[in-house]
Amino acid sequence: MTAPHVIVIGAGSTGAATAHDLALRGLRVTVLERGEIANQTTGRNHCLLHSGGRYCVKDQESAIECIDENLILRRIMPDALELNDGLFVAITEEDLAFKEQFIAGCEACHIPYREIAPQRALQLEPFLNPKLLAAVQVPDGVFEPWRFCVAFLATAKKNGAVVRTFTEVTELVRSGGSVTGVKLRDLRTGRTETLGADIVVNATGPWAGEIAHMGGVDVPVSPTAGVMVTVGRRLNNMVVNRLDKPSDGDIVVPQRTTSIIGTTSWTILDPDQIDIPKDHIEKMIQKGRELIPSIEFTPLRGVGAAARPLIRKANADEREVSRTFECFDHKYDGVEGFVTISGGKTTTARGMAEKVADIVCRKLGLAAECRTKTTPLLSYRYFYN
Image (cartoon, rainbow, N blue to C red; front, side):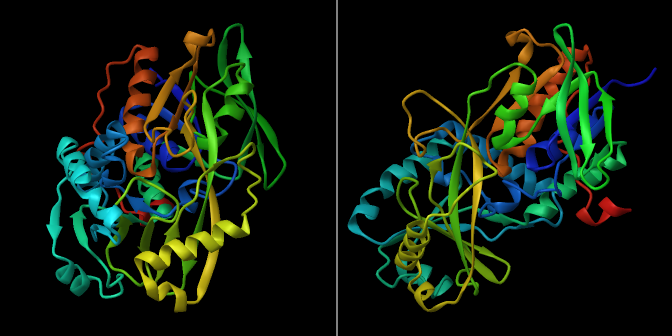
């Protein structure tokens, strides 16, 4: 008997992890990506493997998701992570006043932490602001975005998945009240075709609303943009966060031989068109200097922006919208054969994939269990074998 066929639209972290989970459960999987793997949101963020510390006060659901998935990824992902930990640092008395809330949040969310004396923190990170008043260490890390996604896809391919890049979905094929496949175009050759499927999974991040509209449904995804500034020297070994609620320019992430300062946040209409405001760049540099003064004297390497797929809540601004995720089975919108997964973070991609794969299997009447918590991923190097 032929296994059911699932099309996954999107090869960022969510789509890649979803393809891996579904293939591991024995389904036939085709991944369709209009560009290169990880070429949009996943490849254009500040690459933080979250401990949950950034959200442990204001968004504890997301914080718990982050620490749970952080610990799983450390076990299963061989060579896409730098497990260098992170410091939340107080520079002002206002920061210092936030410390007790932060520690209480870490405890509530089961995030491991330890307080470090300022003198010790400066020994570990000599470029930190010498006015440092307090430091708390947490298990943050850094991921390499392309390797992160390709590790999932290499393992999915080993289990039979097909990955097609530079392949754009132009239409969802509908029959009666069901989505039965997609129409696609190969962007290299211009060739078009129709590909059938038992289920189509929309894992397109900030573009989830656009794909959902092809199926005649709406999803409450609000694309928001954030500016990041990269300087041409690695000034910190650990991730450095401001000890405060998440805000603009409150983090410096080491990435290989550079340092990434992030980030701002504002709502956008089109995730394909992000104009970077000059004042956002200036603000990132200014805020980054408050954490690591040497940023002022370090050459600028680049400026970038990414769109985030936040799940919109009524009357919430960008910083108040939860960083958790949601799965949408569109049978409740009157459309069968179509599921959307959006929100979340790269850190939580595996957990997001588990939830959407559970829905897919339930819809198909399959009893296959998730095994991605314990199954080691292949190295990204196996993708091209």
